[in-house]
Image 1 (tube, rainbow, N blue to C red):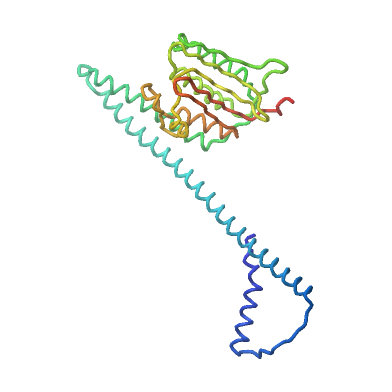
Image 2: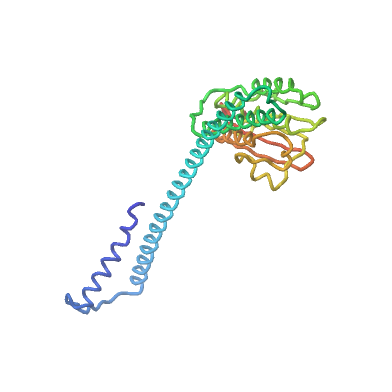
Length: 302
């Protein structure tokens, strides 16, 4: 494909020869010939086919160059994004260290509600810096490939969630298939999958309201195992849905609740690094359904 330009060599030679003969640099005898209509049609067909093949090769070469250029641009953008996240984390960490040192050296008698609020905001920024560092690491770190018992992992996560104060006013359920066979395990990094699903359940608890219900359902979907986290929370505005998973983005229904805007970004990165997909459906005032699909460790049951 890289040598598609060779297809125009015959045309170049023909044009060069015609130019030499027309300028009188070489004798230009007149040639008379006879051919039947069938032969002429055959030659015309061969000529058109040759021109079409040459044009196709040229188009293909140009298309591949454009595709490779787009891939390079995409890779450069991803690398720039990673460098920005690392630089932002570094700058935040340096500034937070200086502010914390100043707060520690502040005389106790000068402690006030404002200083207490400052300490709280510094801790929040420290958490944001930690999440940014996690996100930058997730985009580059190798993904371990091990067999993960998703049923046991979800059971542990739900038990942990039920110990949280918010869970007292929520109805939480976990559905795991048992018949005709149990849920297939998934292939991937146990700790990262744990973090992704923990964030999904945590969001349902954090952004929900007293009396809301949360259901965690699992099922096999072709070569994937799907985890569906559904809730009857405030929902997400349609205009916000395309931006969920972007760093630091927070939907309008979550503005009143404390958060960094990095939870879903971490989830999306983890799921995609495992070769899975993340889908979100929501209706304002009715609830949200998030489905994370991970590759099964063995083919799904027939």
